[in-house]
Image (cartoon, rainbow, N blue to C red):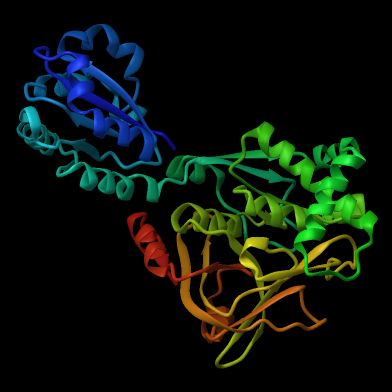
Length: 418
């Protein structure tokens, strides 16, 4: 998400003065905060307002004193109730480092906002402090993006959907429906040479190959290339796919495709599970980590084992290429995870109004033919939660300790912890 920032200056100064005076801060806002900068002065507001100020900016940078009335005129011209992005609260953020009477003007504007019943805040200090505050205010909480739904949720997922209007209104997420026929057709158009290159790269990364044949590897690579192409064309930040339909229709799997795409920055989940996809998406946006989507599979009073047939390869110390557990078809991943700290997390409910999070340490990476290929055992008793209050089936495992960051996001957005 680009942070739209409007710099206000008085008519006594020009744009060149602002660019020179605040060159370092503006450059850092653009490079580190992905800010889209626009400078506006008192003399230009009438002619440029309609064309350029259709909605409330993410932040106002107060460059000089004497801009109080300019701000008021802009505020009164914008229909804040209808044009403010619905996934953002109507809080006005101002940047003022104090030079050129900027802080004095910001304080007057802050008081004006309070008088009209609007919350405001001033980010003040050194450039380092201002940039850090902006990153905390905006980028940590931004989930805005496009999420693809390849087919409907799997038939057994009767409680894992998300209200689409809610996603749009509260988090700026645009759901995109994609017919699975596009995947089936796309697989047919991938050349053998392209698929062989992907398969060879995967073989070089794997510790070993068990069940899959070379032909199986090539077909799984075709799924990866097809999904990657569709994600690029649809500009997707994340997606979930009704993967068992691909197993039945194409006699191959999407397990490897999801593993590789997660590693490449496209959050990818299986079985059409939107709630778990949102959990993975949050892990990427808030924690900066890929996530392992898994089924709770074996619980004791001291440990919990989770398992699934796909995992980002970057989470694993090593990986073995296997067939898909349930069907015995195609290509899946048996990943060996390091015995380190993890966060177990799930964000759920049709309106994403509850979540569960805990931190634990991996004590084993077992293997049994009775469970999905990648298995991990955490030193946490999940029985009281899972057997009585569980938010769905799938949960996500994130490497590292991230419970505090997740709780902070959830508290800001009014989500209840289970």
